Image (cartoon, rainbow, N blue to C red; front, side):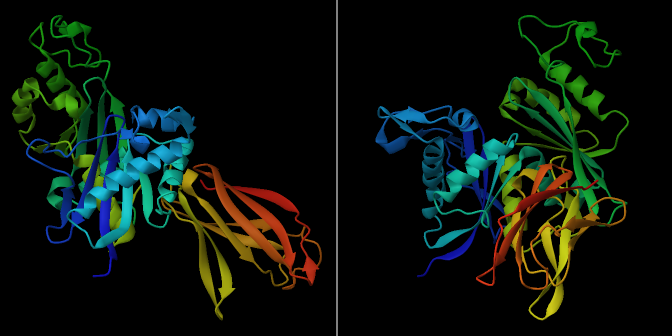
Length: 417
């Protein structure tokens, strides 16, 4: 039987543990890979025994620094080690899906920065997973995709998520602005870590707790009552249709006691597979039949406008998209070759995803030697300096033997507000 690219995968890649899930087309939901009675959450250690030598732990910290690691007395590039980890982890799908290949993989990580993401992409390319079959998103976007793939009655109002790892307590509220078309989906975040610092043997007085309701009747509080008050403070005056609780810190007796009270008047869900499930749904959205065409999942690190230009190709004028609205700015790197037809400027159209009118920017290509009358070839590369600042690098490539290129290079910058 020939292998087909059908697998839709999500991976939650964290410092200590990793989870992997497959989109089950019959169940129409993610299924954890490696789940067992002893390991119901299918948690895998984010560590690797590279080349059958000693175990390399703290893997993601090493990826962030980018420095080589020592294995067997020699230095090894961290991208190679991470690639080995990905190969071993993704191979776990072979047991249940021996004749299927990966169609799309989305990896979600707690936070993102350009260098970290670049090294992950490099590691994936070493095992043949190029950018057309893989995307990297942060936990916020994973959370948004997870919610939008649930039944609509769960997100008719705003949706709240508390993420507690035992030390850091974050509250992320998903909001949908339906006044736009398509509707805009975003997340606001509050950090309650300081308010939730708690020592069991040293209960706090209510007046010592910052940002907590002053009407608490009990002067000595427990961890459960502190958390309950934080929730009420975060949700006060808002219609929250559903609450999600995730993180190792909620695996405790105090959470078992307080969660039923927090579920009054709303739906409450608790689990450790929210992010990996959200990544799997995102993979389905990116690489399979789209379901969220009426929504734009947006975060502060995304490009706020579609950048495009009109080109003549295959006998007709058509739109060439250089950057899509919603792309993380540090992932945009588009390069095209153009043959001008007497033009000395290139028109770039910027269509915002929010409010505002589309704008047209003109890029000067007059520095090209000679006339731009189909006798030159221009390379245009698009990257971003930040979410709103696009940098166009333009290169004179000449036109074969007829007109050698001058290799002249210049840059134009536009702002997508």
